[in-house]
Amino acid sequence: MDQTTANVQSDTQQEAIVSDQSQPQEQQVDFKSLIPEDYKEEKSLQNFSNMNDFVKSYLHSQKLVGADKIPVPNKLATDEDWNAVYERLGRPETPDGYKYDLPKETKLEESTLKAFSEEAHKLGLLPKQAQGIINYYNSIAEQSEQASLVNEEASRAEAEVELRKEYGPAYDLKIAQARNLATNTLGADFLRNTKLADGSVLGNHPQVVRAFADLASKMSEDSMVQGETPSVMTVKEIDSEIESLTQPGSAYWDKTHINHRKAVSEVQRLYELKNNG
Image (cartoon, rainbow, N blue to C red):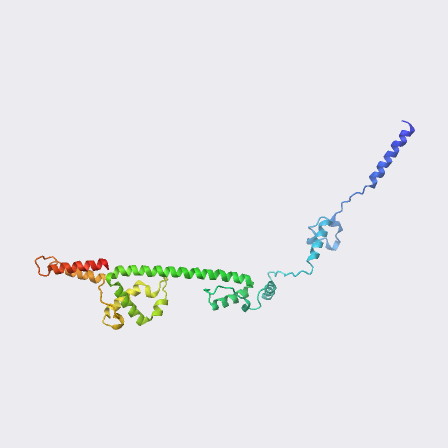
């Protein structure tokens, strides 16, 4: 190797060394080593492993400085502490501050709304929450009333079928007499508005109607019972009359008896009255 070639190689090696030294070397720094001794045990700093994350967290917290924050009371908080939170959230100052937007035909009475507002205020409910609960219960009340009307009508229909079967042609008379007597003794409003445990109205209950009808029969001469209704036989009375006319040895069975045809005709009339009543 000549001197010239040796010099060239030497220069190339020196340039490579210089070039390599000109590149900055990234140094790995342990973030925790940068924390002052007084703060090394802080739990909030244990989550950081590099400066980049720490700076991001710091900048984010700075943005929250001055924001309107509401502290969450702990298990030792008093009623005053919670009331302060409720007020910050928007609870009315007094129960009267709750205003409800309800339909005109609402089923909730004013006293019910007032009692609910007082309880809602104690619980710290916001107006929107209170409104939602009231809407729900008003809907339930409407459904309950509709169901009650359906049950009442069904009960009335069942009572009518039962009494028509029992009274037959005398149904209208018996009902009129029972109604006259019940109305004059208890009053129409009491009969119409009093509901029994099964949901039926007092004035429509079969046992009540039957009781007044039986009592009316015993007071048949009383004007407050009879009113202007004609006399009509019940099914029981018809059966009793048929039994009397058709007993063994009666004219009904003796074709030679002078009243045979009359007895047969009367029995036939009673059966028709019973079946068509």
